[in-house]
Each structure stands twice: as C-alpha cells, then as structure tokens.
Amino acid sequence: MYEIKQKLKQGELVIGTMVSELRNPNVMYMLAQCGFDFVVLDTEHGAYSPESVSDMIAAARGAAIPLVVRIPEIRRETILKPLDSGAAGLLVPQVNTVEQAQAVIEHAKYPPFGNRGVGLRRAHSLYRKLVATDYLSQANADTFIAVQAETTTAIDNVDAIASVTGLDSVFVGPMDLSVSLGIPGQVTHPDEVAAIDRVIAVCQESNIAPGIMMFDMPTLKTWINKGMRFVVYSSDISLLADIAADSVKELKSIASD
Image 1 (cartoon, rainbow, N blue to C red):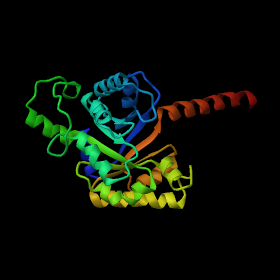
Image 2 (image 1 turned 90 degrees about the vertical axis):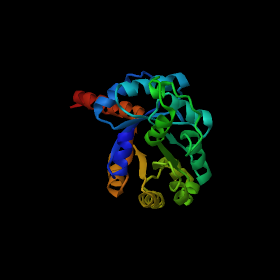
Image 3 (image 1 turned 45 degrees about the horizontal axis):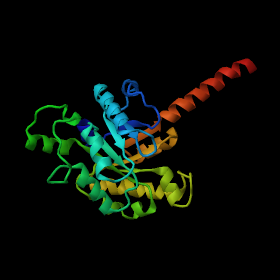
Image 4 (image 1 turned 120 degrees about the horizontal axis):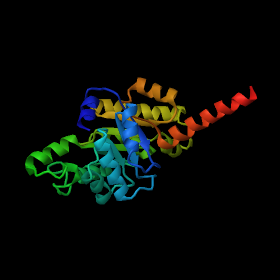
C-alpha cells in the first residue's frame, strides 16, 4: 500500500473496486490481473468472518494487490484484526466527528501516533523476526487509513476530521450522504454535489486524498476531473450482475431480429 500512498501524495489517481459477496480468495488474483490498483473488502455490509477476511488478505498479498478492509464500526477489535492479518489499510464508515477519526488512528497506529496492540510475529510481518523500533515506524508509514464522510454531520466537521494526523483520505459515501441530505439516491443533486465539492476542497487544503465510490462511469469521470484521487468503481455484485444481464439481453435479442 505504500506505493499507493506515495501516488496519492503526488496527486495521482488510484482505482479500485469493492468485494462484498464473493468468498473465494482467488477473486483477488482475478482483480489484480484486471489492472486495479487496490481492492476494498467490505465487512460493513458483507458477511465475512475473521477467518474469511484473513484468507482474502493472504490471497491479495500473493496476487500483489493491496487490500483495504472496510470495517463495520470503530472498535479496537475491528481495526486490529484486519491489520494484524496483513491488510494494507482500512476504510472506516460513518466517521462524523474529529473524536471518531482520532479513535481510528489510536487503534490503527503504533506509538507515538496511536496505541495499536503490538503482535509482531504475525501475518502482517510475514512471521519474520523483527527489530521492533524499525518495524513499528515502517508499519505506521505504510498503513493506509481512509474515513468515510457520509452524513451532513461529517460534512460539517470535515475540516477538523481531515486535519487528524495519520489520515490518508476522506472518502465520500454518496448513497448514505444523499439519505442524510434528505434526497435519497439523488447522488447528482446540487446539494449533494456541493457537499462532495467541499470534501474535495478540504482534502486538497489538508494534503490528503479525496475519495469516492461510484457505480456510474460518467458520474465517476466527472468527480475524477474535479479532483477525486482514491476512487472505487463498482463492486463484485454489479460487475457480475450487470455485465451478465447485458450479455443475456444482447444474445436473446438475436432471436427477435
């Protein structure tokens, strides 16, 4: 993930997709060969056990594609376990206040930035013998942390949230944000656009990457042109179901021609 962090610091674009239903770890190899820069494993909405998450992380590392785990909530356990299993980073939903953002860093980073529990000889270190001082510093530098701004409260507090040391990205959840704004599903509504524009501006001022997830390619291109850099396009569900549906429709249309 360090390479992606460097790309984002330089203002480059990185593109990933989300996996929330598929459980075969080999999906990581499939997505790696597609050219994605990273994958998000969704444990907020996806029904993954800790063992499944660990298997997915191991496969992603074998495929040389960084895996970011979207955790279900801010707790020590939900933050520690994916990182100890070797996740490249975390995407944390429903971060509405600076205190919540600070709590994420507290659990995700080793001292002096946080208080992450130290279990050195584990999957995240490839079970190597390590010099603690060197490894903890490198792990802090390498671990990617993105927090989601998906409510009006988060938008109101985005300046303070983006200023928290250790954060690499503020990531917009367009659907939840639209619900919070009282315009469910209207992700191109002017009020939503204004809120997302604010996130981009604040992130650029704070020298961190603005991020977003979109299923609609034209809309996503618009946000990339506006400055989004940590970008998640679609998901295993949509990529499979939509392409399959389009293919079946096209083939069946032959009989009616």
